Image (tube, one colour):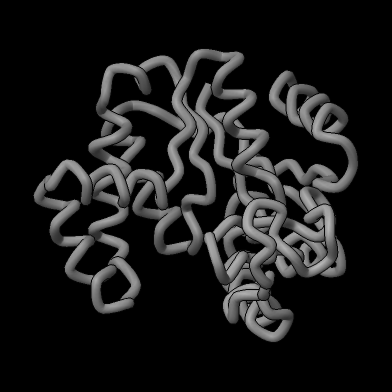
Length: 214
């Protein structure tokens, strides 16, 4: 089983990827986790990625794809994998296709998590952080007992700049612009399945399993 999970930030693809990967005994491969692991291990590509990350620049495609190639060659990925949030662009998708072809592999299914903008905003803007101890809360999913105050130290809770509605909207706009051609790319290959990313995790999981079974 070789799957790609796509969806906007906050769509819930990571949660579902972890669950399905655990059930099937295959790795969930998320580029963010991969980058952090490579940096921590001090690999050549990890150090190259770190040089960009340290100055706040985007890590180039060649580095990210190199890390993906290394990860796919590890033993636990031999019987399958779930790529979580990669590729992000058509250029990355084309490189990934060549990479897999060189290994005589193909993607079985691409799952796109459809979530309304309003719901994504609710999920992404609800985080609050304590100024005192750094504890995190979410207004919808894990709210503090007292509004605006930390349960641990009673410190003031605030919203980080990158969680503000204006910032989140910009992130979603960039994602939508990148993803539309990518979805067309996989649709033209007969690989794309759209599922509703709103509802209970169990219902979403069932929809994914049905899509994979088909």
